[in-house]
Image (cartoon, rainbow, N blue to C red; front, side, top):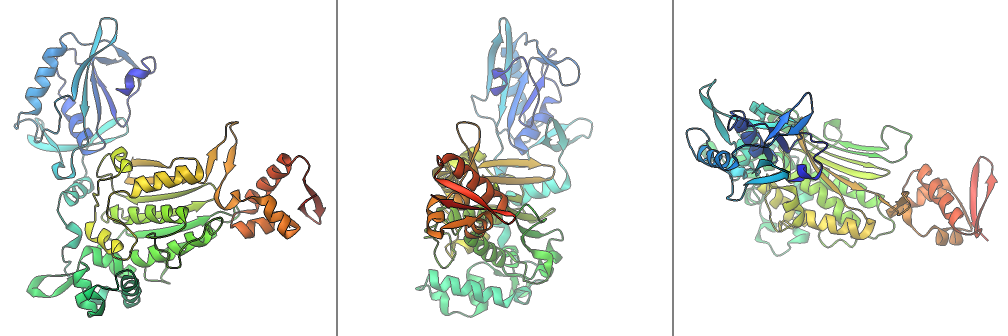
Length: 482
């Protein structure tokens, strides 16, 4: 009941709705119930009056027990509410001010198998579903309903696709994947099978009409050419950008529509993983395969886990996208689609609920995923240990997407930002070994921008008590140790 922490500045939000309820349960309460259940969940507070635009006043309710009883009767009435997602203690009366009692209805996020949660609309004389967008409830769009239907269909990414066969796959990607599979699972009987049999066993092919082998959604996304994937999902895009120099729009980019590589998910992951490994080469070491499994590089492992997490949880309908942006101060990984479970539960670990389970298994078979539901927990643990900062995980709704932000800086006690990772090496040792360095030398050594290197060198000099000095060398400063 977070609203009660600041009663002087009440405001509605993605997960909070106020209603006056002076004449009993308001009819539009059920729109909000449906919207919260179909989105992130939220609290409906009865007994708060809207007194002007974005101004709210706690007026309380006269008969909280009656309101609570009416709510339970209605939510369990199949002629009014299609599905009851409430728990027994989700409705409570709370005295927030002297003689001012409100009723708080905590609507949980519905399970994926329960969506869409519909309520009866008298005007339309039909059951309809709503979704929450910011401070308002909206009728669920066709895209919203397609996403919910996909999520409550078991093994949706393994169904065969008409018109797509093994000919839609990039042969080089298949070979690349099979080599990784053989290295990771050398004892598997699938190692020596034909491509068709192997792809059938991992779920990339399935039997369709006439008992012919057709590509599955997972197989097409994992191994298909970009133009074949676009025939199935027209807005499909996977995009990696490195924006670390501060000078260019981007310093490096890998995008599925560039027509100079296959554009599928397996090649995207392996290519971007290699870029990440090279960027974070200092101060860590990594294994040769670039796989997250068994990596000695905690940062590379965490970023790779975040990328795999986005690829296997993305919704590849409507605005189908996965984006990875590496900048000087953060790594941002985003994917289309909503959370399947509350993100706090996901971070805690132990629950594996992939939107695309066949795709997740494909990454597991080459060591890029553990399927244990511990991926986010691992990322959070590594980031806190290595960087001293926690990632941010957020759900956006216009359009629907999930975004993870991995900060490459962490707050110091004095309010400044301490640079970590590649730029956080013990520069004094580097300077001592090299006799003297410029910002350009440091930038090249640690794969950061010259601006970051300049800031770090200047800070080192200021904190060295005169031990580190600098002199002009043409247009640049050259740093050395006395």
